Image (cartoon, rainbow, N blue to C red; front, side, top):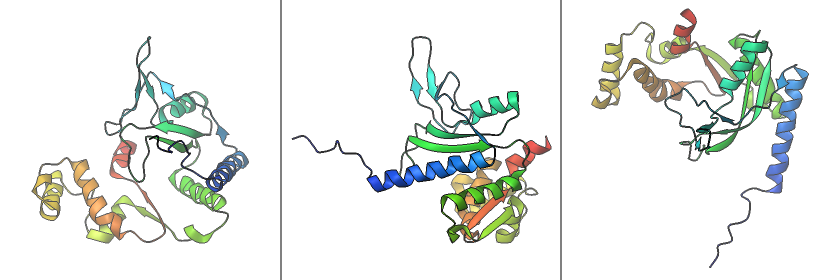
Length: 218
């Protein structure tokens, strides 16, 4: 017996709501002079992040990869033209399957050349305010540095602790399997298990993550 599985997994109401959201996003960026760009979803280059897996497409001229995000192609554009761009379209990640993730999804990503991280935080809130039709669901907005998050919750400075001290903390609090973890893994574990649950309610922006700060200093 054939199952009745040809029906789409959506509704007219969802389609209408999605269309309105996409239209409001495009109108927002148009008003703010950010240009929409249409980028290839197939490329000969793949993501450099070792924790993200690309779909591979076999082609007679060589393997191609479905893009996991528009980051590489957008940054290539910015390096050449110094423009403000946004991309609203499809991206693909082979290992992203779960309640909150699909292997194919719609992504919004944008870049501003003359904005700092605080300008972008404000722009994100403005965009959400427009998309949500002015609802107060994002009324409470908190901005915290990565260091402040640790000091407020655990009274420790993540920049000052040695790798061995972080390993000892993770071993005592989370188990001996983390005793030889890398510095980054230890910091991620502490943030996920102790910092994130203690963050204030509402929207929280965390800036100056350790890796970003080191990249900036170098």
